[in-house]
Image 1 (tube, one colour):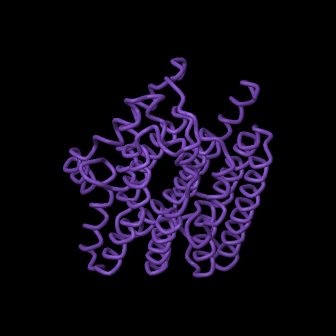
Image 2 (tube, one colour; image 1 turned 30 degrees about the vertical axis):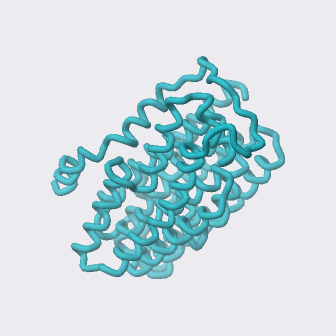
Image 3 (cartoon, rainbow, N blue to C red; image 1 turned 90 degrees about the vertical axis):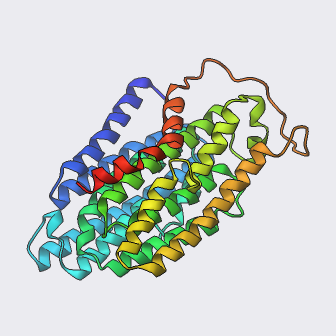
Length: 349
């Protein structure tokens, strides 16, 4: 793609998100979401491959549906209550429609079906943008709308997303689909605690972005798209293979890695709110996700080459690859757990 065109598209992507962040009026927020969607579509379709075009079409249709639902919810609220402000969304019909529309935009269960298929058709860099940056604008709206939503709906959405994210990733061999189901499960954790502690939701989103960025960049550096190619990735970069395994375990939430921090604090907050059943179910669904991360780690660390794989084992990395962003996010994805006391102190301020 022409660098000037790419610069304009990425600038529009940032503009759409910032516009949604800064808006207090539903129409302005909707415009930001639309700019965001229209900016990423050419980036998704730049490969000119049938799978990429199919993924782009699916993404466009789901995002257009969600945008239409948001417009319908805000118009309904303005008609019934007379308010266009995001904070003034108060009618039950409008609040429920807006929440389902934002769930569709994010890929929360039960409206998650588009996310694994779309992510599978994209290259890893575009998939990284879709899994991280594209979540920010809908989440900003969801945090503002959440106080008006019935807490049982948010808990149901969160638990269902965690269950679907854990269950769906179990039998996958494609790494992009595994990361898509991982995204659904992590979003479930964020939505589960959204009404009780929004600061914990933001902390979880921040750490999810760091860990997902590290995972995507590591897979891109290794040029791995399936479990089979991941199993021979140690020949390309012996140092990166164990670090990738640790990042995957951090995504699974194992201590003493960074991914344990949000799960720990969320479970603690749920018990403080006297919600033992959702906390127990959340902890059990985390085991499902942990299983497929352990499966990837097993493929990377415990299958010794030569093995029965048909993939050829390539040799060392091309040293022209820029690995500084990968290094930074990997360190953050592995080493932030000791900062938990400082984080909890900041959250209580």
